[in-house]
View (cartoon, rainbow, N blue to C red):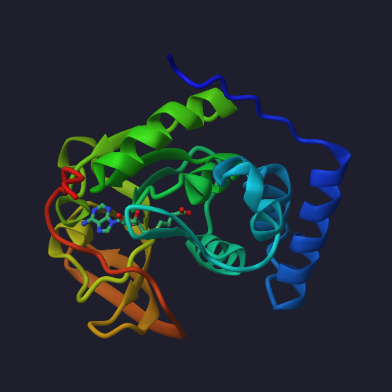
Length: 223
Ligand code: SAH
């Protein structure tokens, strides 16, 4: 039998979330729309009940399959540079828990998100609609993007990419923005890519972050 999921968001949860949002603001995030989105999405819904304190501390946390839910500050940082407008078509690589996906939806984006770990894809596919969030979810390899749905106004990569995948550059609309952590070691440089023309890109290197690696191909969850 399927486990009945009860999702509640009490004043206590909201109070904890408010503190988290203030902590993220103090670390330098000024984008009010992003901070509001952070306030709206109940992060504790993405973690087991026992991890309530972890849900509302500004840290990444394990979610299974060797992956993590991104740190709220990192989610806010990437989201502010992505500069999403209502109605933008956004491609996200690395659904993971789906937390960042929900932040993008709260910003008014139409979200297309890809996850290569079957276990995490299945979990998010169940959970997000239950929470009232309805992105288009795909089980596949983010290196390939989604040519059938391109071009995208924005592309967000939430795993550490050894290089910027050519396919993703192609699938970005002219005038579009990509935010991608790039680096082959365990540290990546957050990189902002602006597509100026079909074959002209401007790259800006921002701060260093640590992400789980962007791996090729799908993973069937074999243990
Ligand atoms: N945005 C997520 C962060 C998850 S961590 C969240 O808020 O929870 C990054 C995710 O990228 C992991 O789930 C990992 O499995 C996934 N990933 C790694 N390489 C990938 C690829 N090539 N295509 C799609 N997803 C990938």
